[in-house]
Length: 165
Length: 165
DNA sequence: GTTATTGCAAACCATTTGCAAGTGT
DNA sequence: ACACTTGCAAATGGTTTGCAATAAC
Image (cartoon, rainbow over all chains, first blue to last red):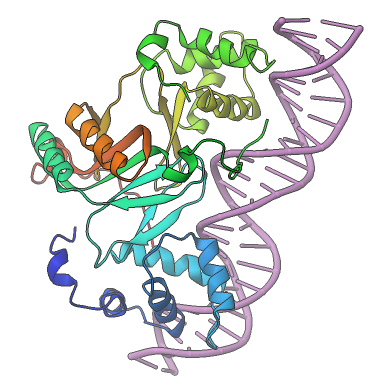
């Protein structure tokens, strides 16, 4: 859908969301605005639960219920502001999809850390391959799995443990 | 963990699983064997629920409970036979991770078709990028989103529709 | 014979939803 | 005023788990 990212970027996330809502007869409530401001105040990945917790603590007089957080996140994805990234451990994570350039991730299998990187060559190759299949690309997602610098060091303290049996 | 994929490939999936189990004092039961045979009888993506249903119909005298399917899939992932692929719609999907070469996917946003492709350049670039971060890669997953040949043709019949609200 | 495994049904848990009260336009 | 939203709590739905019966080794 949205192709002209470089140009859209002028508008603030809140404004963009307001536009999205307006065109559907929806409203920019205090809660929604608060969530957007908060979510775009830093560039990092987060899941619904983390957001709910932070919005609880970080209370500037406004608190947002769990249900509203879920509902709003869903709409932010539709509005093109956030992207939902499915993680194999069942936890979905969100990241900025607006005002932020295409990037990919290194995912540590041990500690779960996400490291972002950017590379144009990949986009180029992808474009060519797709064209060969008569496929029109709009975006891509590349995740590289392995061990981050810390976790690949020998005999470090044990990291997170996830499963049993 | 497993690095010598090219060599391991000699052994059948069932054997590989048996080895995995053996080294942990676990057993290759009828149910587990049946699931592995079934899962590796065709190369396609599936989710837990689909598998449960198929194992129910396709009954060769053996039936496997939902709980066992879940438990076994989890172990097949640990054994390096399957890979769990998180999909943004909440449904996790599995694919062969053993005896099948690295490949990536073109995913049609309209009809959902998955087209596989293989490209070494990408692996090479990924390897270099990761190295620069002190990251040791074991595998990667690249999904390219867009429209497949059919769906990009003008005015075709309407395809799947997914969401509401 | 031991000990792991299965199947069932209950338990979990993140997410969704119905509904009455509240709020933006 | 009217419709959209919120928060609460109950409902959902996929996945997990406790436990007694069963089957590998």
